[in-house]
Image (cartoon, rainbow, N blue to C red):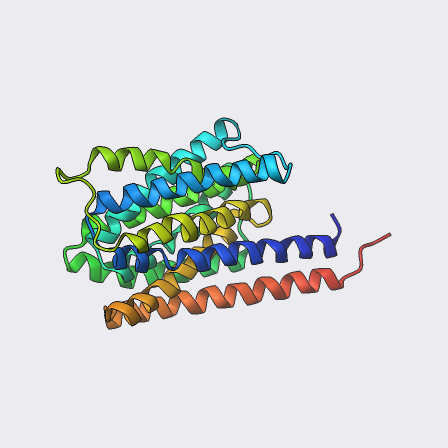
Length: 298
């Protein structure tokens, strides 16, 4: 692949994955706006996403004539299970620790993805990526320390589990090179089934169902479709870093809507993460531009 083609592919991956990260940043605010118990929200959110997956598959295959698999082999099933379990751990984190803690701990996704890619795919992260991850670990440490002192250990642990599960799904997707765009959507049926079994005696309890329906029918499918497509164009650590858009934006949306002001320590840690991410992105763009400018030998 030529340098110019590689740069174009990388830009396409950045655009797709960036859109996914932006859509994902509205997940927690919409969950909070809906109001209700964790299992009711998870059931509606997951069932809505599953229905959209079936509809998208029908349109892509029958209307557009492009063949795409709902579950591409064993790797697709494993990736789907990781995404499904992540839905459960994520909602448990949202209900058991602060929004800022959840999204900032999810910053570990890129670190876990880089380590897994290094170990299993032999894709050694660049020195810039390794340095960025070390800075991110320091920033997350500041945030988690406050959560631990506040008695939010279970919620923080669920958020960390989500980060690990997402990184595992990204790494396996990268290794398989298969089109996993619909996998996280169709396997939403797994957390939906778990949630239906755990519903309270009175059934679904949701104060404003419109918010969670919009989340499950529009924002989550868009987010995970884009983020699951990302590994076809970007390395696993780079895709993981786009989950940081939720880290950066979700606390702002919650702050604006619910007046849930993050602690000073959380803001400092978040600022460190933002600066690390921006610095890494600028460095990667500069490096690729320089490689593109160097003519290939005949």
